[in-house]
Every structure is written in structure tokens, then in C-alpha cells.
Amino acid sequence: MSTKDICVDESSIPTCRVDSFYNKDGLSIRNYSWTVKKAIGLIILIHGLTTHMRLAFLKHNVNIVSNNHAELVDADNYYLYEGSWIEQFNKNGYSVYGIDLQGHGESDGYDNLRLHVNNFDDYAGDVIEYIRKVNASITSEQSILDEDTLDHDKSKNRKKLPIYILGSSMGGNVVLRALEILGESNEDLSKLNIKGCISLSGMVSITKIGSIKSLKYRLYYLPGINLLSSICSTCRTSQGKVKFEKYPFIEDILSYDKYRYKGDMTNKLAYGIVKCIDTLHKNIKSYPSNIPVLFIHSKNDTICDYGDVESFYKGLHNVNKELYALEDMDHDLIAEPGNENVLKKIIQWMNNKNKN
Image (cartoon, rainbow, N blue to C red; front, side, top):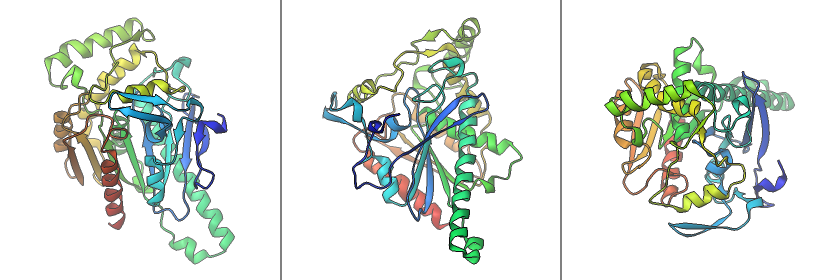
């Protein structure tokens, strides 16, 4: 990746650190971090379908002419730190980490294909592996710092930084599922120090295919896409195409990005997306009771239905939870007008959890 890929002012600190790790299938997973000194916490960001880390959470080098159109300024300096959610997290004391999910952005894809996955839970597996790697790197850095200062009492009393994980759209499903998988394991979750989860327009349902309890979902979409996936898993389907009807300028922002795959997803991924909603609901009792969760969702979301998110929220028992409903936004809460208030809510929520 060239240094031009990220546009950061000379005086801006921090800058982006780019790295990769190999997952269980040997796929290279690209990851990014913007760390701050004397951080009060860490936040791991997981993007949605067809986007990637920088496209989802950095600003874009465009002029938004109207709700209908955005004009490209510079495709080679497309990702802007200044004015982004990442900058605001940093300014509030949070180091930021994130990955390009496999088959997205600059990460490898299974079978060398974009928008393809062998098993949808592999996304959650990569997130869990990345959380462990972030934990290990922070522990290592703190150990080096303590050795340099030779302050062993300080080392003994140093508290681990709280980790928060945030998923947008499909990423919301992925982070919730990752926590279900961890809840099903015998792992001591206190070692990971995850102190909260944020689902932002989370893919707990898909408006187009209906509720998981509906006949349309059970008798048409689930068996139909499963059949297509069985016949030709790597054939591509246009069924996953979405339109941002309220704010079409978002489609311009997506179209200008050179790392975003602009083709259709494979049948295997399409089936994974349809099935993962059912999987998430069936395993809701596995969600760890000691990890607070914040759902932020618009009642007017045209892609992921608010009603099903509310139902999932009510199904979480013995969990510190909050559902923050929006009235005047649609699905892309990071880019739409009013996103500043959403960001403010997230930071306030994390700050309050830090006090507990």
C-alpha cells in the first residue's frame, strides 16, 4: 500500500499503522491501528458488507453536493483522518484498531475470490483472533514500557485497558456472533478484557427477506439460496445489491473507492448472510452476560429492520443492554447527516462503562 492511500496532515498524531496476520485458513487479513499515548481504552471497528475498514470509518475526499450526489476530489488521497470517527475516538483517548474482513478491502479472499467465504462464522473467527492479537500486542508494549522505567510496583498495579468492539451493518452481526462463540467456549473471557459491544445498524435481520419467523424467509429465501449455494457456490448473485434511497450520495462514495470490489457476492456468501441471522438468534443465550451491549438503530432503516433488532434486544436476558433508537436517519449511521450525534452517544456510553 502506498503512503498516499491515507491522507493525514503533517501535524496529525497518530498516523495509521498497517499490518497483516494469517488466519486459520492461511488468508492474509489486513489490519490497521491508530494508537494514542495514555489511552483510556481501545475500540476495534468491524465494517459491513462490500466495504472495508478505511472506507467505512475514515472520511472521504469528496465534496457532498447534495443528498443525491458527491463529487470526487482525489481518488489517490481518498481516506481522510481529519474529521473522521477515528480522529474523534483518538481525541477522546481511545486507540483504534480494525481489519478488512476476508474477501474485502486488501484482505485475501477464500479460494482467492472477493465477496466469498467458506463459512460465515469464519468472519467471527477472524475477529476473535484479532482481539487476541491486539491484547497480546498491548500486553507486550506495556511490559517493555515497565522494563524501561524499572517501576515494578507500577507494573504490578497497571490496569489492562478496556476493549470495546463495534460492528456496523453486517459487522454488527459478526461482532455479536463472535461474542456468542466466545460465550460458548470455556475460555476465561476476563483475559480478553472486552468491556462492551456496539451494534450499529446491526444485521440482526434483513428487511428484504423478512423476519426469520416469516414464511418468506423459511420457505423461500433460506432453502432457495441454500440450493443455489449447493449447485454452484462460487457463482455470483445480484440479490445482495442495496440502494441508499434517502441518501444516494453514499452510493457515489462507495463507487469512487478503488479497493472496494464492485461485483456481486457469491452464492456461498449470500447463503451465509441469510443463514447467519437465524444462527445469531438461535444462539442468543450464549451471549456473555458480563459484556454490556449498545444497539444503535434507526426506526427508518430500509436495509436492516428495526423491529427485529428490538426483538433480539428483548431476547437478551441478564445482560447490561441499551437500545438507542433514531428517528431521522437510515442505515449508514457513520456517513449520513446526524452521524456526529451517533458518535457522541458511543463515546459517552464507553466513558460511562469505564467508570464502572
